[in-house]
Image (cartoon, rainbow, N blue to C red):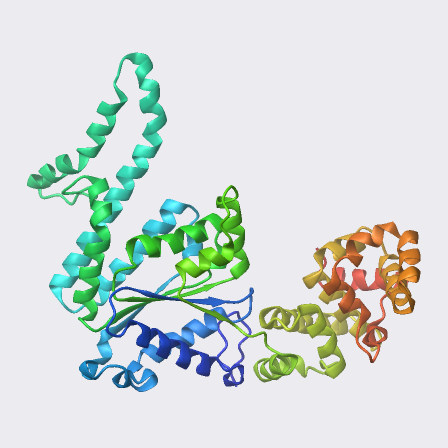
Length: 461
């Protein structure tokens, strides 16, 4: 039996990703059938919600698009689709840490992969040539930005700054003259870099058409956009609109909607532009990954990590699952990370003989706090062992009345910042079956001992 302990995309059919992939791919194909220009699908979800898994599933569907998407149903004049008409490319923007790097890397990745994959020499040559020229133009323009300050300062020495930029714009022509030496010149440009950038969109459209054919599509997956700095995430989206929007492309973009909204807020803080308006302009189809319910998460992880979940003598039972999912909000990745970490801590604690049957669920609860509520955990490490008990007292007071809660909170002002976190309070409160008492860690001496156990098992920060 294989065990998926790493962070690779999950292919469990019960998550409905096959169905989502089928329908999203079908819509994208239909939207671009008989139409010029690109179509963009945004796949929205929080960290660990399965965006990569879904996009990998869509990618597999495109390997046999005729069967999966039924393109013959859309337009009769496209009945002769060939399976090679749909080409896929994957791009991870988070690997690049500045706006120039991300924009250039996006273009270079697409063109270089097209060149490598194409069986036609003329297409390879055109893709490589366009990639080199775009890279050269970016280098020249970037150097120009750095020279701006120096050029302006040069006036102090009697040098006209316009002459510097004139020389810079002529760099491409001079570089081309050096071809007589039969040397490859990375700065080869046959025109002004500004004019080249303006014409790039049309040139890209033509080379894509030669690569995929008149009725084909270039399907580009952009993953982990929410791992970029907000400003860089905007750069990627705007690059698609500025340079690639007129080609026969389909873009699938995985991102957290909040990242884009934050970036828009920062960049357009003086304008009345909302994240919602921005996304509507950039992305034609928005798909929000449904939150996975507790049953789905439990079922998948019990299947994937059975030997860890069912580990003896203390398996993860239904009560511990409930506590775990309350802490992780059912986030698949967070829950999986806990299960793997817990299996190690549980094994070490038993081997070191530092935890008994009563301490095991309590130890799991402290580990959940460490992994999901780091601010509270840091406070506990600073010897605030009474903090959990105080929070429990406030929670119990809330069950009585608002006035009782206010009175309890006034006694423990250090709890105010934690009481404001509804997720944390919900976790500590438990459910109607009083799950909190299942692993009650409100006793200061117990809590101190639990923190010591985590330290002994190499988990304490």
